[in-house]
Image (cartoon, rainbow, N blue to C red; front, side):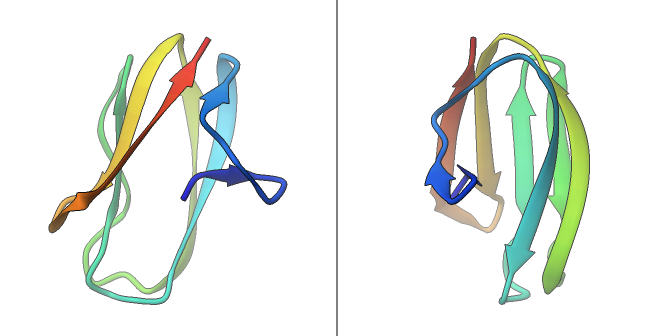
Length: 79
């Protein structure tokens, strides 16, 4: 789930953001796609713990997902 300050995020303003991914399992990854961001893998498979990456977001729709688990797919907009 994408959250900011403990609240679920569905929309952001354009700009630079640091994504912190925390995973208690080593069977997931976190991949981000959107305008100017193509297959940005923040955590890879077999990773367990917390990892951060800073990404500049432009206007548009972004998708983040777990490659091995197609049902773990979410979107947010930048406007």
